[in-house]
Length: 542
Ligand code: HAS
View 1 (tube, protein in one colour):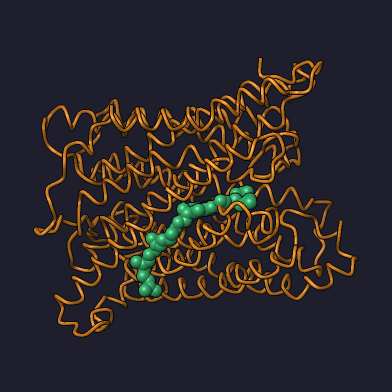
View 2 (cartoon, rainbow, N blue to C red):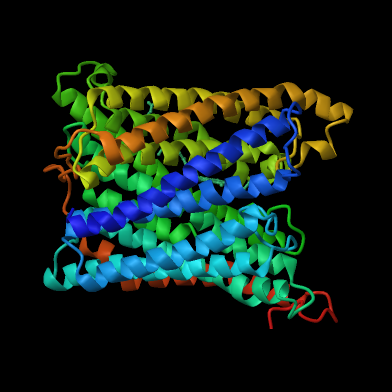
């Protein structure tokens, strides 16, 4: 990656790891509060640290790491960015960062303890929402630089398939742009006017719907960069080849189609949406499982082919041949393994009836700590171990490689305890997002306490994991020996079928994507607007 592009990517990565440090500390505090044995000092509120934790880890760490990774990926596979593309990257970075600082300041001042989902009826200071608007606009500007490179590449290479990694980045950004329009409407037309006192009330149902129109694809915006590492980087790291370029592209396109018109699976217990539309979106949710199953298939195939090429015999002999001592492989692999139970949990959540049992319990928190906080985050850590030294001109030493493996094991151990306890006690009805002091004295809460203590134990182990990863990252940024580190990009297997150009026909895919969104959302949103309680000024969007 060109040094100038590398600098831009690194700027994003710095912010991501600062967010990890502060957000991780708040996570530890939270599990301690929930164990019933710790009270926050200096009048700091439970919801305040819960918001800092969710915003910094769920929104800031992820978005900044993803942008840093994607910029490097595009520059590596499609060539150095032009000055204009890089300039867009920097403008986007600063607009996002000013927005992040504004929003984070309001959260830290307890003026925006509205959780990372920030929909009505919880209300924040208007500066929080203005900051969010800047983050969204900044991401569009920065994203335009990356998409610009792709367009330039395609013009220069007519009739050819674009580099796989760049293509994947563009799918992820397209999904992001289409879905963030929903949250932009919510922020600009509902939350900002409401927090400024220009309208008295907002339609809560519409606010939640606009949020989840964005909120579900948001989780795939986190997941797809992890899939980019699995599909493109891991085959090279293990010395193999990409199983199939066409399959990888198809799976990404399926994410573009099915990840957006499914937000109602977060609102299955929401009154005001008819069960027909909920059912339809549940069906579409189960469709979005398919590209993940394709990915599982493709990864197993890649591993088996490589393991057998190295002499692995029998049904599972090939498994032993994989490079278990290499943190660039093992750390994301642990993330992949975690995605098997994590994905199964997601399918349970999406099943209309079972959702009644788990919704708003801490089971859901257990689910997303396995998905985003294990699968995605461990893959990002594994990627950081080659990406950062590649960008800083350093190398990962043997000791750091060992420490990285220990870090991932500590993480997996702490998360198994914490997320496992969350899943179990969620089935006993323990609520998520509830201040312990509001229910701590009840007989039922006494039943939950042992699990909440287990969560605190797991959370403490995870915090040790955060300290370890920050130590490794600091080493790679400033202290590791100078040298060359590769940005691994796998080649396509010679046995793979030719990639059909239709997979890159954006007109077709974007049209289907928009048609599905209109199909899933138009009627229910019109219903919401028409059925908003009468006479409530400002209750409607217009
Ligand atoms: Fe989810 C709630 C349904 C995936 C994140 N989810 C959440 C929330 C978050 C989140 C943050 O339907 C909470 C939001 C909030 O604050 O309220 N989720 C699903 C479904 C999937 C799914 C169906 N979620 C994710 C991913 C996330 C994420 C990915 C983050 C990155 N989720 C839900 C539902 C809710 C929900 C409901 C709302 C619950 C409620 O009531 O509030 C699917 O995409 C999952 C498909 C995945 C698979 C797994 C495939 C396995 C693979 C690994 C292969 C392994 C290998 C290694 C090769 C089918 C690809 C080999 C290893 C060996 C050991 C041999």
